[in-house]
Length: 452
Image (cartoon, rainbow, N blue to C red; front, side, top):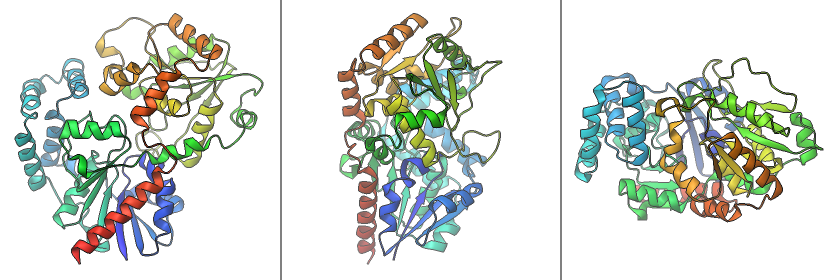
């Protein structure tokens, strides 16, 4: 019996991996036992959705390492030592906008020091040697796994689990969770093998971290397998369920969210602007972020979709995305005329099914860097805009022109959307979940044979 431990600490992991064919394939393997580790307060939900005869759920306390002095120091080192366009942008925001001036000198020195391979290796050695341990030892001792599958290798909880596994001599397979992850921070742990979603992510990982390409498998993005199957229900039925008039077209708006701006007035402003178009609007709020609306009166031709499984009323960041939530998004993307959003992954989802999308970047009043959505200048968003597959608008008039253009000609910018797919969907064939599971089973068998 092979035992595989799978982490699920980020709220997107259950949607991205577990709720796909990935877990179904592992279930069908008669000699495989799967242990999913998640937050202790989510155990009941995970048992209900994912538990089964050969799938066990274990809960742990989250973010234990950074509550210690040493753990917090090494976590910050992982950010300071990394030098990329996006990392520099984030540090600029922290220094200049959040007033963390004491970090400045250390940040500059660490950034340049982090360019050295030897420095990174030394810091990783210190991190592995001195970061606090023992948070997950009881699970490893209970199940004696053959393999740890870390689904989000930059997550603090995953990092602690990987350190623990290494201490017990357990092989680690890692995965890059999202398209924007490689440009964010250093890899504190280099896994024995790494899964990525596309050739672009593979190239970024090898470029940023000098991780060997021979140890990377491009498996695709499992949760996008469902997107390629098309909508689950007809447009007429979807409109009736969501509260729209099926005889009229609708736009899908995905708010920026409060996390990307100091005081969120952009979402309410954009919602007020697009309401003037007179077209029906479906606003799909982010499942794990709050969206500030102040005395906003929702017009009759605008409806809301609020996805997310709530565990703590006032906390958004830990909410899970159900299969039903994700299917509703898929249906909305297929049935909408076009998509309007901020600097999120929604334009990627739209491009996968060749749906036009618009990135909105304007405000009620002009403002500087600190009051704006700085992530529009992040490397992955700039790369997205450079494809020509999205319309990037900086004013109300530009937005109206783009909306009219896409409605009149949905094929506009189709070549750019094809470039988006070539960059981030190189392995989108509807079998990413199955492929990821097969790879995991192959490695579990390989490592077990090596032990024997």
